[in-house]
Every structure is written in structure tokens, then in C-alpha cells.
Image (tube, rainbow, N blue to C red; front, side, top):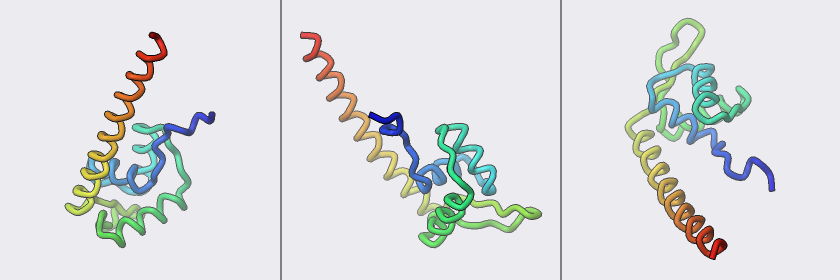
Length: 108
């Protein structure tokens, strides 16, 4: 079984999570995601996901700061992130309960 089974690597979700901490430009988003999730993806993946999230109204591109364009989470993006996190929490709680129960049955 591969090591990637449990990796959280959905670029959209990771970008929303990064921007929940405040506005960032592309490179800052990549670095932040790597820091909190150990997931690295290519700039093409990042900018494709940013365009999709912006089109969906989940993030907004702010005025450029020099050559860099920062992005920010919109209220809609915040709601989507909250909903995704709630779903993930239910999955984690359910899986944890089942793993714990299985561990007890194996020991018996």
C-alpha cells in the first residue's frame, strides 16, 4: 500500500485553507501549503486552481503588489471551507472510532 493513501492533496482545499490565514500571493500560497501539509504542487496546478476558485467566487484577486498579485478568501469561500472541514471532521471521527474498535477486536 502506497504512502500517499492518507495525503490531503486537493489543491482547491489547500488553497482555501492557506488563504483562511490571510491574503497571499502565489508563491506565498505554495510555501504555506508546503509548511502546513507537506504537499508541493507545480505553479501550473496552483494557477489553474486559483483561476477555478476565483471563477467560482471562492477567492478574489486583489490589486497587484509590484509583480505579485495577492489573493484573499471571500465570504463564500470561507463557508465552503467550513463545510469541507466539517465533512472531513465527520470522516475522521468515524474512521477513528472504527479503527479503535477494530484494534480492540484484534487484541481480544
